[in-house]
Amino acid sequence: MTLKHILNPFLTALCLASPAAALELTSADIADGSTVEMPFVFDGWGCEGQNISPELSWSDAPEGTQSFALMVHDPDAPTGGAGFWHWIVLDIPAEVTGLAQNASAEGMPEGTRVIANDYGVEGWGGPCPPQGDDPHRYNVTLYALPEAKLPVPAGASKAVVGFTVNATALAKASFQATYGH
Image 1 (cartoon, rainbow, N blue to C red):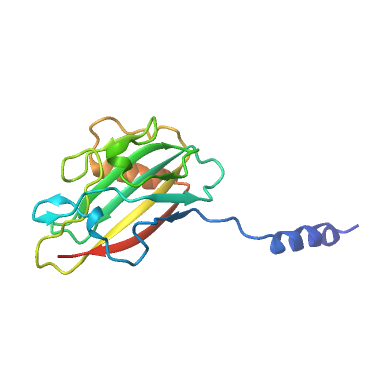
Image 2 (image 1 turned 90 degrees about the vertical axis):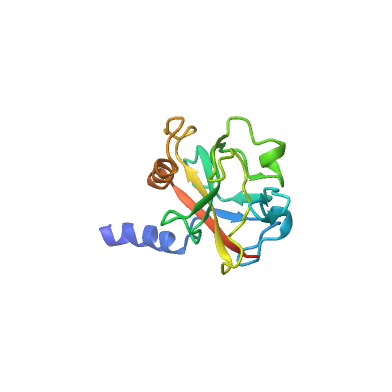
């Protein structure tokens, strides 16, 4: 038997195998490409929303996932370059497959760490771009991580958190919505 006879069935099976599912992130409250509705908009700074965190669901985490991180960012905020962080959640246990609507106020999964957003609050801070700006984009991104606890010290900057999350991620999934007033 030649190497060709051994490898051909293996290679054929490999080519016919369906690809691994990719991490998927969805929300019943904020659809990809939609406009963020008032219940999820910030309540303050000239905005009159209810500041309720949206429902989020995810599936198809890659093998080796030990935790998740969730980051919500406005790249259009006029901050001089870094945008604006609306929600940073670390160490979401691997068995968790979503967050209920208003989880930020009503209770996050046990073991979860929440980093202060750019409003200075450890929780959801809804959209609130400056009055008259074009609508801003809001990127909601979930990261599958290979560690149960992300190795960032308490008080680490958002840049260090973001770098560590991106450098260690096994996979990520995201969607984008807009808001302006």
